[in-house]
Length: 253
Image (cartoon, rainbow, N blue to C red):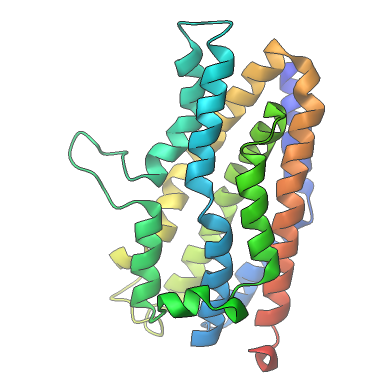
């Protein structure tokens, strides 16, 4: 029953129209390099969403700890670790035994600076689509939703889409390495894209484990998890649909 409940949510995520919009975006950035204005629109909108992800994951991990520890004192933090594991990467802590690495926010900044985008470009309201702002606001709210199942479903959808999303980003920028001023396809400045391609499959696996753990404990949260997952996917679809419309029409840039 728990596995079936998880599969229902996961299948709804992979069947959602948002992934078609993401695929279209991948086709756009593979067809030609983005102009400066196109990059400003893409990264400005992406930042409006992405900036709220790391703290949201930490907030969700704290909530899972607080709730689980009431029923299973010795294993509460272990359950929350399935969520917190994703934030270890976001905060640059995954090689802590050697040294701290740049956080994902810092990698984002390094990449956009290399591409010639200033903070003024990224924060200019004309470069931030409303759908990106809405996605960021929803991310902040849903990770802290009063319904924990919604937050878990939202997080699962975020990890499952990231697993595909950053592959498209990386492939598109590698294809036009010279036009983007990269040393080659393996230029370290692409770390913001590359690190997500590396870690997201594991994040999906840990997200799956915590959702199933909650379904085993309380099967009644399945509708909440579905609502949270669909809230993410609907916003994701709107964001990439808006980006696709603008980027596909050079006159709008």
